Length: 144
Image 1 (cartoon, one colour):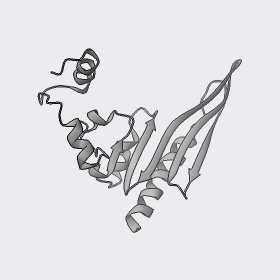
Image 2 (spheres, one colour; image 1 turned 180 degrees about the horizontal axis):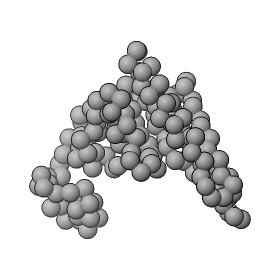
Image 3 (cartoon, helix red, strand yellow; image 1 turned 90 degrees about the horizontal axis):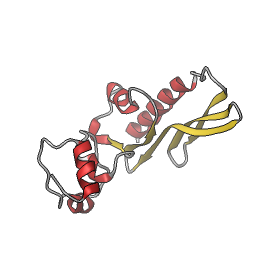
Image 4 (tube, helix red, strand yellow; image 1 turned 135 degrees about the vertical axis):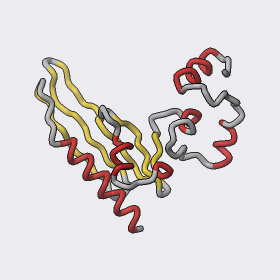
């Protein structure tokens, strides 16, 4: 429980840091949304850009089954790296914005059950295959 409380603090700390940077264009504001009961944390960009309404997520992070799930990361450096710098093991961070079959190549947790992981393991690939090559091959129907 203490570990999860620490993760919650890290996530809030990172989101609060990014929330202080108001975009220099348009009438846009940053809005923090912390749902501590469901362990869902977001940083939204909301407002007007000229005549267009803007409403989008910059960061969306959840804690599920003891793992940190990064659902969306619109930052340049990636908050997963910031969490690692704070002491969170890569094995407890899921880059959920990557397709499940790609996650095992990221160096972070997959967030999949062993059964689900094995179902993705049917696809045999060369170790030197990049995520981009893998994605392209799957869309073409030919596995490298």
